[in-house]
Picture 1: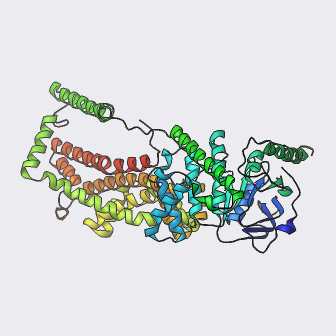
Picture 2: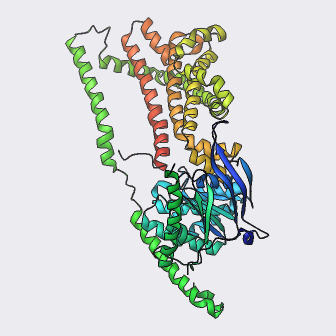
Picture 3: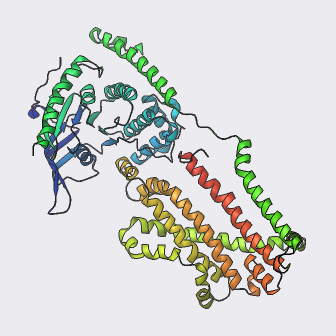
Length: 262
Length: 306
């Protein structure tokens, strides 16, 4: 079931890719007192692929996502994406001065969708995350899970090939998170999007992804990759998910232990 | 949901699974949503009146009673403290002569148009200071320093520069209100959560579009607070200007009325003017700024249930 193998990068460098990260490094700080956060990261995300980036705190996974999103520039290396990626944050980042529907319409407007089509498209996207009645709702009137679904709908409104997710479910309760895993998996199937999903939750990574990429910390390097062959729909409680999670967790712990040794 | 039956036999069971999972998921989400959605309750009208209207009415009544008692007991000379009835008589007189609203209108017109002018100047100035680093470093400190300068200080130079006319009044209002409005906007922009800016940038709102769609609406609460203060400053500056600089051509506003009361040694007229100034200031705040502020805060869920 859960065959964990080191993936051969050569196999994946096909003609097209949703994101191509090549030898990317990133340092922060003043010249002279620089700290290397990401060290020589190379990673391709194929069209329609679901990849999770896993790592302990300080591994620079959010930094990497910011670089791919174009919010920051790498110190070295190059990042190619087809168009501007959509980005979802841990906080919903919805604009509180707009209703749920208008938040989505703003994304459509900034994308250049004509005014006459925006309303219908926003309703359709809300329907996609099963929030058909929430168009006129204010952000503070929605629960945490609903906010993240509106945020997901807004990200989808960008009509991007690549969806970047920065621990989007980390602040939710376990029940809601579980439901949103199902939701995301289904949407991914329906839309054929490529997803690059950052998390520190091993089970979540295995539950969602086709490929799990483990980053080591300080500086962030790709430590290992696993291909996850467990068929969808998966449950986070599945024994196969647990089995692979255990293996990844062991490796992750090994990475963390190294930092205590000096 | 069962319309995918035409697909090949091997994938049919999976489709059915998906369909079952879908209804299950939809039901699950609907249940979670229902459980987690809080009900936003508005306080009933009766309670609002009891808690918000009655206390100030009671306080005003108490002040009137004490005031009347003081004049009855003749502790203070009547020419120093006129009785409430004497002030009321002054109100009636002005009303019957038809000058009451002239006084108010002369000042209110100046105040409001001066404030609007300050708004038009202060808003782009504030944006510039907030968004352009060099401008902020250059004039930011001066702008906040100007706020602590009482605008009455501007009256003498304004009279010398511009003469005894309406432009001098407007100049004093602007010098008082523009820094408040600009500073309010700067504070509002500074408090915009960086997350909104990042979210805006990923959606493609950069440059002027970012300012219009993200920065301005996000800064609105701070901006409104600045406007409110800007109005208070406009009104105060105007009264100072009217009291100091009186000229027959300027017409009689509330400030002149107060000064006329002083020169005529009519304490009841002075009191009348003070009350009108106070009432106009409070009325604008109560009828314009407070509802606006409450509306903005409520729509963002920032208004505590009080």
